Length: 331
Image (cartoon, rainbow, N blue to C red):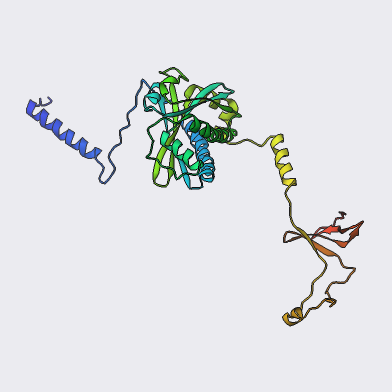
């Protein structure tokens, strides 16, 4: 017959098991267990493939637009991708303190609207530098930008939109155009407040000053682009073979590339003293005979054998065969 344990014995046994369990769960020298909060009311809609796609696109944009700003401002401007977050549109609007600098741009195929947001201090600094001033992030950083500053900055943002089109072109041939400017985010409603958006944050660094440049894309618009079959194939299996149009374009560019061509009539060896004493009318005896073929070099590589001569009023080289191969051509 089994022995019945008392309550004291049961408590002692449970305490011993709890201590053993805690000791087994503890790893010596290991990092503490990381707990990640997950909100089931707002699930994460961005997949890893979509995240990598957005990272690659906006890293390319950061590099290209940073080069453009560096050339325009004549100083080093570093732009790097900081974060990609999924928010509700209302959360994005509430994160911007007026007065702000917000450009709403319209996208065709698929249709939609998105926002690019900059700090007023960065805009004022860019405008001052474009006008030849020293530029300052502290003076007037909290004021709204004027109509003249908006007009000057519009040229810079048009270039930013062109760079955005270029980086998106391998994924989708989109058309982007800025349709309005706003300083108060509450006046912009590109999607309902409860809809998710994807916010891409870029850090703009000029000397020791750092500021942000944010892109706000509606998730519905992004999912419509990424959900296309050709984009899905590219994400899963990589880039497919080039089309006939791309091959024709590459071939056309290659045909326009120039390369140096030279033909060697012969060679000889002389001393440095003889070279110094050369005068007009002196003769150099070559090692090759006149009836021997010459060699044509493409850059520094021997490619053709032939005869040097004249055709009409031009010097010419008649190709008799390839170096190492027997064939016959004439140019």
